Length: 309
View 1 (tube, rainbow, N blue to C red):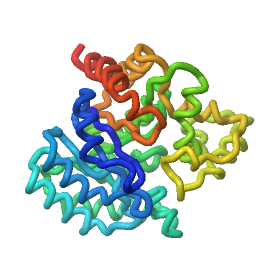
View 2: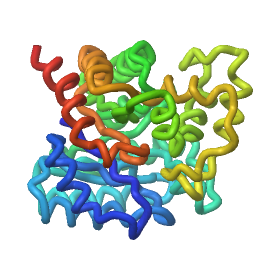
View 3: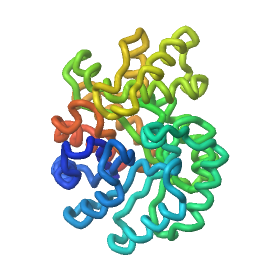
View 4: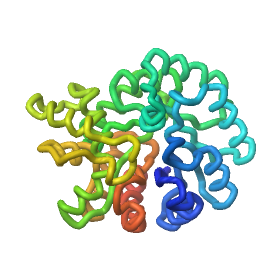
C-alpha cells in the first residue's frame, strides 16, 4: 500500500483533487496532515476523499494526540470505519506543528504511551491504526502498545533497518509502515529546493536521537542549528527553512530520497527488502505533486515489485 500525504495550506488545493491525482499516478490513496492552523481538518477531508473517490485507503496522518483526546480520536475512527469499512487508515502521533503552533509542547513519552493504551482499548479491532515514531524509545513503545507503527526514520536503509527491528522486537506481529520524503529531481540544486520545506523538522529528528541516527559529533551543532531555524508557523512551505548551514545537505541526504526515477526506485526496493508493509509519501516537498506521475511509477516499481519477488 502506497499513500500520498497531503500537507497543503488551507485554500491552496482541494484534497479531493489531490487524491484523484495520486490515484492517477498509481498510488492507493492519501493521508491527510493534522495541523489546525495550517491545513484543512483532516477528519472532515478524509470523509470527502473516501466519498468522492475510489481510493483504497485514506485517513488522517498524523493526528495529534497532543491536541486530541483518545476518546475523540476513537470516535472518529469508528464513524469513518462504519461509513467506509476497510478503507480507513488512522495515524496518530505526539504532534509537531499542530502543538507548537498552539504554544504547547508535545506530550511526554509516558503521557503518549497512556494515550496509545487508551486508544487501542477504544478503537474497533478491524480499524487500521498506526502511531508515528522517529526515535528508538517511541518506536518501541508505539509498536508494543498499538501494534502498528509509521516509522519516520529517514532515507538511509541501515537506520530504517534498525527502526524496523526495534518495532518487531516490541511486537513481532506489528504492522510497520514508513513515512518517506521522496521526489524525482534532475540535480543537486533541484534536490536542495525540494527538501527546503522539511529540512528543519528532519534535523529536529536527528538532533533528538543523534546516537540512534549515528550523527557525527562534529556535525551535531550544525544539525541543531538547522532544527532551531525551522519556523513551524510556515511548516510545509519553503519559507519554513532557516539560514543555510554546513549541515543542510547532510540532513537532506539522511532524510530525503532524491534523484532520477531509477535511483528512487532502487531506494524503495531497499525499503521493501527490510519488511516494510506500507509507504506514506510526504507531500510537502517541492516538486512532488508536479512530478507525481514519475514519482508514483518509481516508488511502485521499486517497492511493490520488490515485495512480489
